[in-house]
Image (cartoon, rainbow, N blue to C red; front, side, top):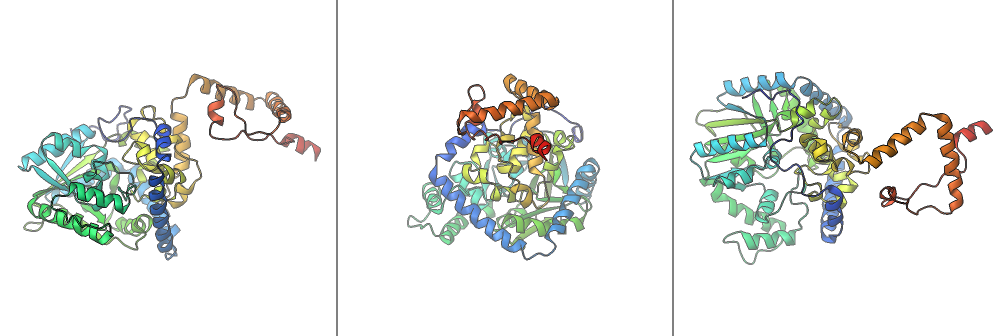
Amino acid sequence: MRRTFLGMPTTAPPGVGHLRGEEPFPAAARQALGDAQLRRNLRHATTTIRAKSAAVISEVPNWEQLRAAGSAIKADAMARLPELLEQLEAAVTAAGGTVHWAADAVEANRIVTDLVRGAGAERVTKVKSMATQEIGLNEALEAAGIEPVETDLAELIVQLGHDRPSHILVPAIHRNRAEIREIFLREMPDVDPDLTDDPPALAAAARRHLRQTFLATRVAISGANFAVAETGTLAVVESEGNGRMCLTLPDTLITVMGIEKVIPTWDDLGVFLQLLPRASTGERMNPYTSMWTGVAPGDGPQRVHLVLLDNGRSAVLADQVGRQALHCIRCSACLNVCPVYERTGGHAYGSVYPGPIGAVLSPQLTGVADNPSLPYASSLCGACYDACPVKINIPELLVHLRAEAPHTKSEAAAMAAAAYTMDHPALYAAAQRAARLSRLAGPRGRGLPPPLNGWTASRDLPEPPPQTFRQWWADR
């Protein structure tokens, strides 16, 4: 069971999970654009994060060298992924942990649910984890009669609000503090009815709400930001300390980790601990960095499990261009600079991974044909590439995936005709002459007739130049 999926490409959708929406991005985005409050919340939050991040990045004279190092480490890890995962399994096992291999979301949910049941628990505390959101673990636990309690403040807001995350780093970015106050008053038992929307007051209310849960819950579930193959060490970085509570107090700790999170050596970790906080939260270092290696007798959890999750990642790895999406360290820098995300928010993407990285990662995990609209959720401005701390060329990936997405017969015929014309100089010159004649029709800006009007629904038809390059060249 444990290694049958490793490195074996598959085009099958990966079980269940939160990787695709109920409607395509254009329809969901159109609805989001009509929410003025959402747009104000997003603009304020992303502008603030961008400014903080830019300030601390400017302090690092070798930032570009760090980016290059992070990119090289990730490329090396993906090239040797099967080898590194087996090395990680051996190191975790030698340190007293247990490793489980999950081919898809269904298998991962079953493994975790069985482990929680085996520990005799009816409730678990959770550290913020994209992998567990991806596979829909909370829903699987609830279906099994187990209560999951999110302990990250933003995740708690989302959970209490019966909502969905809309940002990788700040899941409740679409909520302002007045909305959060209303959620707390409505959903938190014994909350002070005079609670204000002052951020320290809201944080204190959440702290009181969670304190007894931390002390009374014996099983915790986490993700992992990084796993060191050399030592079997898992690492979680966070800003609040709730993760530290989950990682030290329970008897049983279950970590669900995408297989791409492995890095080769302990020294490699130092590169990412410099890149991640500056690119994500605009901090020089994470306030809480927790690392654990298996079981330490008498100290911390005495039953430690690691669930290695594929869920479509082997198929991504098989794509020589697409595999760079697996380099992602979940910093959310690309979301914070993306003009499309800033206007539509994360819910429009329909996936737990929104923004530019979600537009390339989610379709690959599900299969592009099963999630074809996301590669078009971009203006291709390139801001995401400039911001990415590990230099993922997201615009290149978007174009690559657009070529793999299914196209209508009319679009395919139009592209074939264009390619044929451009491959024959005489035809291409005739088309240029025809375009020049179209200038006689008057000012542009009007749409094309059906079936080409879909292209001009969101853009003006370019004005043909008065002279082609060939004519210009001949004149000179």
